[in-house]
Image (cartoon, rainbow, N blue to C red):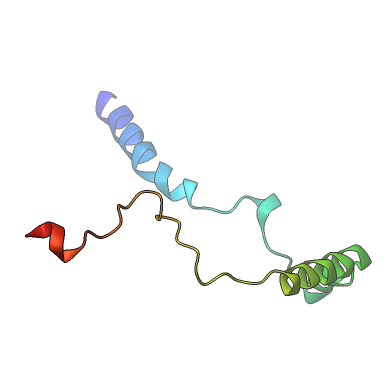
Length: 82
């Protein structure tokens, strides 16, 4: 009896990681395309996308920005190294 219980316990411990990889039913992807396209047709999503794209157009990337500029010391001149 003890061997049977140990075998069942060992099997349960080995099978737990496999159960953790299973996708729960409430997190599954839509099974048909109609459910998927309903989310894309939402008018508020279209407005949000339009606002996002217009905000990206307003932002101009800065090429001179150096996030580590305050951390690094400026390079020493060659005269001071001698």
